[in-house]
Image 1 (cartoon, helix red, strand yellow):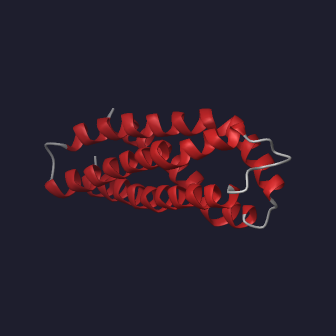
Image 2: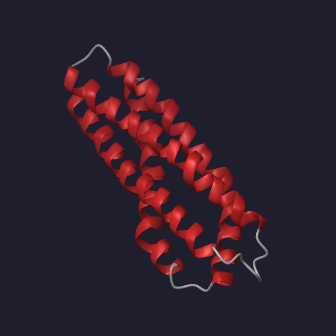
Image 3: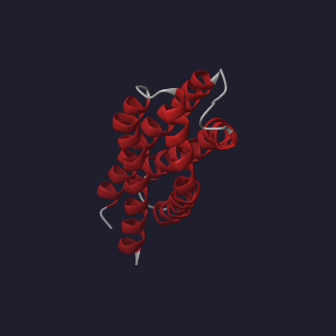
Length: 154
């Protein structure tokens, strides 16, 4: 049972961190070349899909991360530390999402895509800061979860 639970944790974490990394390395550079109208249109379309997908991945990763930490709690301190780091990273991703990215997404959803506000690029930059935090913290968390799983050996 432990192995299946850990597999589900690593799978959800890999999906979440991979999605954040691909966005960071490919989508954001492409978005930065768009006009205000192009950016608004793309973001509104993405928000329609990602406002459901992102929370599902984050909740699945947190729940499975708590379970994984419980599973390794009485095992080696090294494994417990790395699993704790992984969980802290997911929590940090959620905090960044709720305090930076989601408010910007909600603002973008109210824009008239044909006439975005004058400060649209400042909001884009704020969103990108939050996303950069999520992407790199997510990769660190995934690495920590992988290390914990490999060192635990169960």
